[in-house]
Amino acid sequence: MRLNEFMEQRKSSREYKNKKLSKKEIALVEEILDDVNNKAKDCNVDYRLFNGKDVYEGLKGEGGYSGVMIEAPAYITLGMSQLNDKAYIYGSYYLEDIIGKLSSLGFGTCWVSLFSVDKELKEKVFKLNETVDFILAFGKPVTQSILTDEPYSNRLSMEEFVFFNDFNTPATVEKLEDYGLDEIFYYLRNAPSAFNKQPWRFLIKDGKIDLFIDDFQGNVNLTDAGIVMYYYEQLAALTGINASWDLEVDPCIETDKKFIGRTNF
Image 1: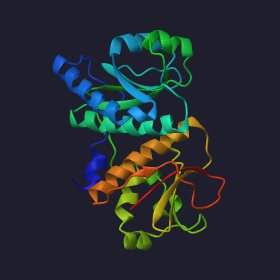
Image 2: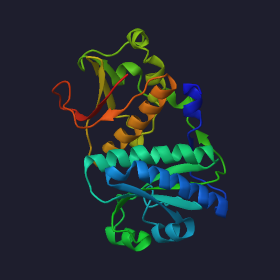
Image 3: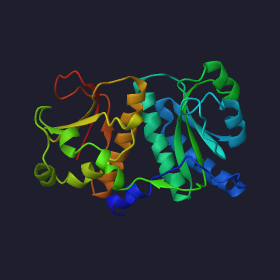
Image 4: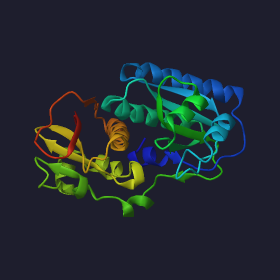
């Protein structure tokens, strides 16, 4: 698969056909969640499938964007048993993995923030003994908004979010080409982020890549980090790079930016 094809298959939709999931579709989604929950078991997160009507009626006027709840045939919760950086980062990382798998089944998806919803209401709706700050709405889309080259006009250039050795030395296309990273970062800049802030900053130094967040605003940016980590890893794999992330190392330089972790190329 080409890198652009990978990005183009990421379907996002806020409108869905009024059609419940079939028993076969439910079984397939549950199989996906079982697989991802097994991979994410050490990150204090888990994912569960919920009926669309129950969640929508429970959160209508409260969840979503300014209280405008997205109505969908089904929802998946991102539950966190412990609230720490790792849970928010890998919670979003693995939710993107779920999105990719749902896309392959023809589903459209949309992240829904529940930060503004009272804890008591979320406990009543989901009946979970864990924190749920995000859910994923999904179903067969009425129309599909697909990540393509079109939004790139509103995206940072590679020189604005990739640097070499220090944050005073922006990457050039030519140097990224020398490292075989130009296509990865060209498409990576289209990764979704809260309010399209694109806060990620990549610093290439000593044969490694460190990920930072510029103007760190808390948990929502940890979610941005997890998403872009997932995209980097997947795009790297398509170019033959077996990339992985290490969140336990120290940053390669001192900076006021929030350090997230390190990967390879």
